[in-house]
Amino acid sequence: MMTVTTVGYGDIFPVTVLGKILGSEITIAGVLLLALPSAILATGFIEERQKERESSLIMAPEKKIELLERISRLKEEGNISIDEFETLRRVVLRDYSRNNELTEDKAGES
Image (cartoon, rainbow, N blue to C red):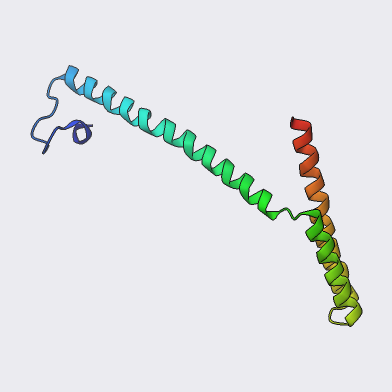
């Protein structure tokens, strides 16, 4: 506490019991005054970044259709196997169903 409550080069510091108690309380209050709002702001920032990341992972339905058509063409041309096609199709459709769940959740919230 003495290091935090010193003024200047540390040559002046609380000596009495009352001064040490008051200096300690002021130091703790100062830390809380700065740390508490910082933690609240950091939490809000992290939540917004997560929302932004989730929304960027969701593809538009037109993009999904285009992607399904493209992998269908690749399968027809023989560039990918049927197993690869099915795996890719499941991934796109799973993302589509996740998008619908998120949309329904947002509609339920409002």
